[in-house]
Length: 245
Length: 254
Image (cartoon, rainbow over the protein chains, first blue to last red):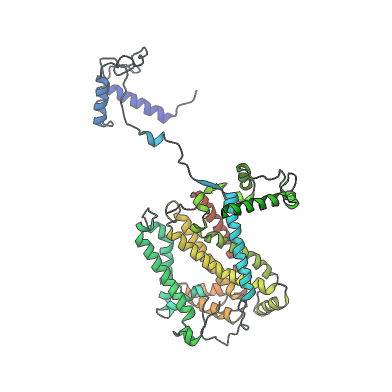
């Protein structure tokens, strides 16, 4: 009923013609192969089948009849000398048949995860509430363009950049170094091709990241606590703190 | 022995609570839970399956995923701080006008004349600093666990974007009180952005809404702070959370 697409029919016809030519051209198509033309000899010229498999197929064809006790071959001549059967490949049992999922130790999200989340939300809210009762957010005097505070500092998370600004040209400190840092950070999963997650296998990645994090942390610390008037280096225990959150 | 007594006391307390009228008014059939609630694996599944939480959590997670010692709750905490900041931020918006003439006075009035004004502003400020910290620590935690490795590479990229949005949100909020701290911190920050190659001047102009910080800058940063950046952040958050689940939950133990 279904119509066979034109290109498929053409391909099938071409294959049929080729098979006929290989078999000598006089064998009628569709006929069951006769017993005197054993498997492996007919398509001997076919280059697509590896020779060792072809040999195995031939060996199977040359094998004697199956021992007694094996299920009787149905009429029509199936078996080593009845059919053109060749072993093309061996599929190992684990690869497609073993569909059993490995058991994973799981727990219900409710209550196990939700309770933990709720408790941590409660703890952080309590912490914020208590901290906010005792420590007020800074509100200095009204902004005044004519009165530059000394020192003028960026928010604490940008103080690492401001610290770099004292050492390098603004283009390098403000754009190049953080740009490269950020780019490397984003690309980390594509640069680090090591499949292992165990710390002992990824000493290099861990040291590199630790150095990176330490680099920024130390710069932020210096910028926050060790920079006084004129953004000069001071010790907080001598000159006091010049830091507002 | 002591443990026995403790758990015995605990189960006694549980029984007492569950026998109380308050408990049964919540959990009996026909009340808040229409079919009542009893603790069974089936009902535990339904709690998630039949609620909006199903968008965030699967019914079951791997046992190690609920260990606080593994995640330190840092990602969840960052998200919770974001919600906290949204709630307190909405409260602050009722009392704040983003113009150079009014901003500082509004904050002053909020702190002195509005009920809970001072403490809500304090909480907003400290939660913002805490969020920067917790997002940063979350990133460090993920790196040290190697949790960015396949199939989670792209979620790491989104995470780094989220870190940047967090910094930008904090930075845009920094200007809004319009005090000396805000003005000069932002002056230093935007001067740095002026050194962007090729487009430096233009970047600075767009950010400031002019050649120098003024009332236009305030309006611009206010809009970024309360609308645009949270909007973008929420979209990235949604992708981040969705990918966590699609990539097989949080990463396994080392």
